[in-house]
Length: 379
Image 1: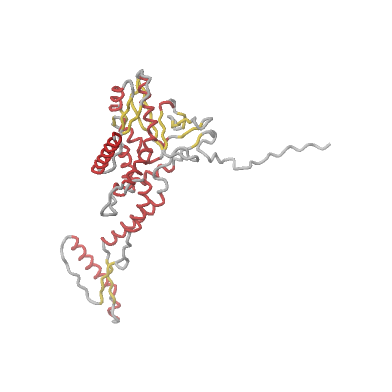
Image 2 (image 1 turned 120 degrees about the horizontal axis):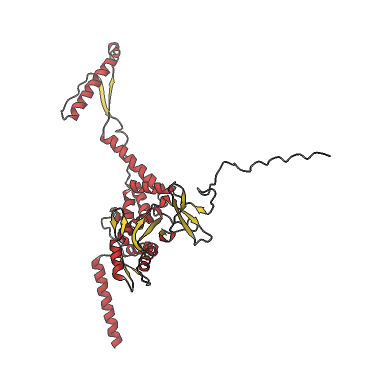
């Protein structure tokens, strides 16, 4: 009877030392990262290109303010919204909203926290979205926000019902929102290269370098003394340039065939107006703002048309609709902790982008139309 051979161990099908690649949590597959690698890129783009910084700031300002109405506790709620601490020496709901919108537009998502102390809503704070991750639950409606603990490990934050999370234009493959600066890195890189090249070229053209060339004749003695002649010319030229820096006019005198040329004078500086404008047009189109609002006067008669104002108004209302649920949660929590069961309503300020004269003229025409309609109905 043959003796049964022991089974040989089966080798691993994949490399055993490689961790999970889908997310930084190898053993917790319910975690989905927020892809934080682009945060530094968006911050760098905003710092490098003033037009992008101005676009985000303008959109935050154009969103405007709001008021909240409710059947009960109206006065106390208004006082809370005016005086609530928001951190960073900021007070008031509008300060919180400005920082919240800034993060939403820059990163595509914004995080906030409602601080409860002594049984009352005491403060509002906004957080750093780059330090947070999301854990999906059993259904797409269940999400848990996770942050670093005292050891630096990501753990679910303890009071999820006090956290505010808003995403901008979420996609099916990316439910965490997309930044306003998405699709801009490629064009921004080209634009920065042009700006850098302009600086280098103007430094070359502004800080002129000279080439002093001395050609010896066919005399054997002069060819032998060429090195000493070149050294003497170099000293005299250096002394003349040094005196020029001090405001002293000094002539340069040399014997022989000596020529002075400007280094790089034969290379003209390329015209950058057309390529820079083409790149800026693409970047500005992504923001949805008219060029003149960003300081780009491409036309002597630049003004906002009615169609541009309508489109910009629709963009601003889309941003308002994104942050309105967070504002309603803040007001609802204050009302519940204050003993009121009513539902608050956020009333946004009117967006005024048209010229006041045109608005007055339009109101006058509407009043005339209404009067004519009443007269026709009487007949």
